[in-house]
Amino acid sequence: MSAAGAAAAPGWTGATGAPTRLVLLRHGQTAMSVDRRYSGSASDPGLTELGHAQARAAARRLAGAGWRFAAVVSSPQRRARATAGHAAAALGLEVEVDEDLRETDFGSWEGLTFAEAAARDPRRHADWLADPTLAPPGGEAFAEVDARVRAARGRLAGRGPADLLVVSHVTPIKALLRQGLGVGFELFVNLHLDLASVSVAEFYADGPTSVTLVNDTGHLG
Image 1 (cartoon, rainbow, N blue to C red):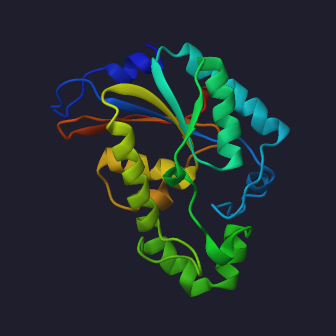
Image 2 (image 1 turned 90 degrees about the vertical axis):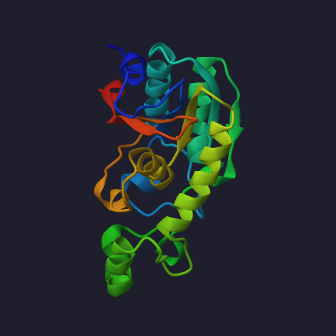
């Protein structure tokens, strides 16, 4: 069964009608992601050569998967817009930008690795991972990201039932998956999402939500 076919299969939510189906694509590789550095809304690295290749592979997969995309909506950041550009070209669509799909502001941890941030602010870093309302120094809490992503989701859902490609970053995509699953903020630290991975969350007008795909990277094989 195709990914689109699987996503359209009936579930246990009791939902009626067709959903707003958000196909979530993480951007491709950047120089900062090679070193696994915090790369938030304050940095704007472009894609590496491999990142462009990953984006093109994802675009080919999306164009052939059977989804009927009505729009491609991207974070404003360069790495996401470049990834979205490859997909939009394959789908014959234009790239729209939603500011609320930008990555977390990591404050003074921007550009640091996990280990470097933990060494600089050990107590704050540990508390940040456990408390979604606590922000990095000078940065943004997970709960704040979740709230603005929810606002973006509302605008997307307002278009009515449709397949929409959303190109963004780790934290905003996790926020949409968290909202689709109806689970707590532990998902932010327990879920891994690969570069150029595809996930799917569905939101129905009468309330139910579901997640039908997470971190699919088969197109990168």
